[in-house]
Length: 288
Image: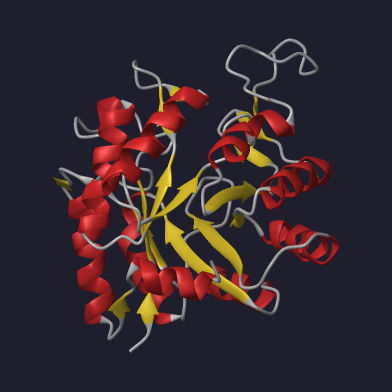
């Protein structure tokens, strides 16, 4: 029976408070939700932080408080902090050379300041440049390299976030040139508009482009979240769920917590003939 690592994506930065009254927003709420998810079976918690009004935050103080609160209660669960904020460009409608309000582009080292400070076991590393609604997400090869160098410098394992096939081409160019350690960690993000569709064929394409020595997870957004979780497990990958990806347990039934989403994910993993990995098993599989 294979040990499947379950990641819980606690809050993200796009899920809106009006979508669910149960979305964790404050550092205390995010930390408590992460601890509950760990109790429900998640061995990794993927953390974004928010401002008090629910908008996305990059405040180092928020990350520090979340990490301190989690570690005061649980030293086993693996922490995976995002480095995604700071990559969005919204062009001015009259002159696309000018950034309109809502753009969040930052220098790459500012996007990993909290990684340098807190040194989590894992952090995400986005490689994609693509349309995102009426905005553009921008990650140049140089940006990816600068961020990767800073992440590796403090001993954190990067998780490559893959939104399109070209992201894997970039990853395969980047890996030999920097001291990444096997197993390399990949996530296929499926179902985001203008990115990879959520389908088995796309997941198989991603698997075929992975470098040797890669550990991977496929996950879907919205109504595809649980179907893609099951397909990932069936194809030999790991699993992810959480309010970042979906707020629903099933059609018409909203989840009341990340723990509730994790409990359903654990049932699926077990029903497919696998075991839910403990944090110790996850550390061993990831070489941490």
